[in-house]
Length: 162
Length: 153
Image 1: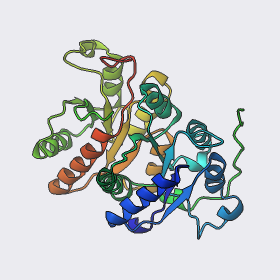
Image 2: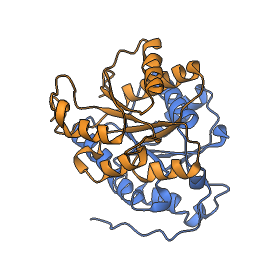
Image 3: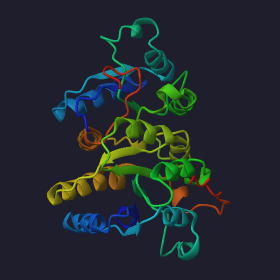
Image 4: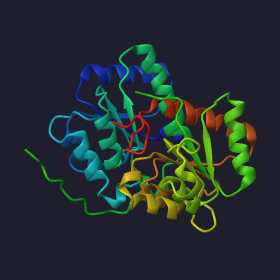
């Protein structure tokens, strides 16, 4: 059911996370939202490690909203890693950023992001933003069923660049 | 960063379906330029600027592709695979709009780099709604610029 599809937000700005969650609530979007705030936590969630082994509580998300600037692994590294995992090809990755650099846009798409959005900071804009994301990614765009219930796979570590 | 007047290359073998997509855009009062390629091979020629497509005034490089899966000569998945092998074109957002509901097709399409996959609705009014949602979203989503685009950085 589309209402149960999970949204995973990878964002370290706590205040912004709070705003987004509030916006989704205002927009009456019922989907569960999980939040990770570092690159490592994002990877752990996607790999199903640690507490994220419990896929009943932490299902693979229909949509990942990913900030480019995360502590630890960068958003670009997360995209690159996810796209090297055959079991995650159905993961829709939408970059969310304050960066307005065209170069970042090109790089994100080149690495395999599905889409790239500037972060709205105005609350009314955020509500509209939530609606647009809900309509397009959760209601209209299809996620493969096989992605939601994957076969167990080995997932490799990305190289951590210092 | 969003741009609502993006150029669409519609890759669709069925002339009626292509006309319906154009109609759906019109009914939404969306006036974006829509170019049409009748199958994957023609889309390749368009992207490469071969033959008539060398005229980039008449046939501008697309910002977004809307691609059907079932096409003769070169189908949608084969086109995705070709695009993936050509890094200069790989960045273009590809929107699959097809009648196939098969999970294996959805999985393969994403695996080959499709940005999104939508199932073609049978009724025109649903298609009109779909086009509205697609346009609202892709007007806001930043789109990459390759060296083939006008004003490329």
